[in-house]
Length: 238
Image 1 (cartoon, helix red, strand yellow):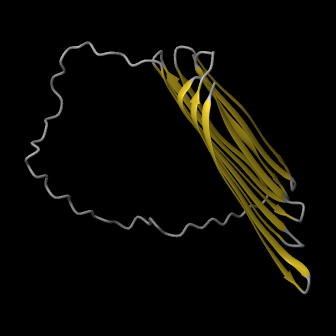
Image 2 (spheres, helix red, strand yellow):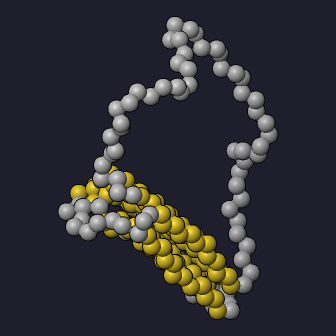
Image 3 (spheres, rainbow, N blue to C red):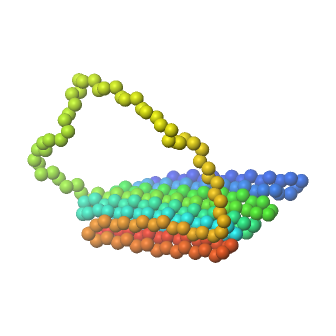
């Protein structure tokens, strides 16, 4: 039996501009955030994470990007896993242009602590002649299971760094030296797309005596019509 706590946030915003009774443009934004934390129990041993999703862009100029990574490691005492997936889709063209992005993550086995975060945003700008859509979906998962902590041998440990005298006042902190690194400047989020492109970036790592790491992916483009990126990553140990 699993004991979880879920928190969600949902936002929808639309702006319609009309002139002389005719709609000139429609701009919308939708955001959804959910966080699930808790303990996962199972009759099965080991731990596994499945994380993935897809990005789909429809239009004359399209872009789909999939970034997925997952790592799991452990032994008989401690098992931990982390995964992140980000899917982005942008579609531009006439009124039929569209974009969608979906991501998900699941944790299987036992975990004393687990966190699953999902965030998605969909932005569109439409006029009678053209439209552009941007969709992004992010999922992060983390799991930690502690079977037992090895006990020490009981022998005294010597050495280590010297211990400072608590009666001695510490020296004043050094003044920070600032350099012009360009930090804090405005970021230009403008994206120019010409054609149809599908991109993926994937990493999967499993460390343990009995381990598994698999990747399923596809990237498809159709000239002046479509971009699609799909990735599913599975990592497991026992």
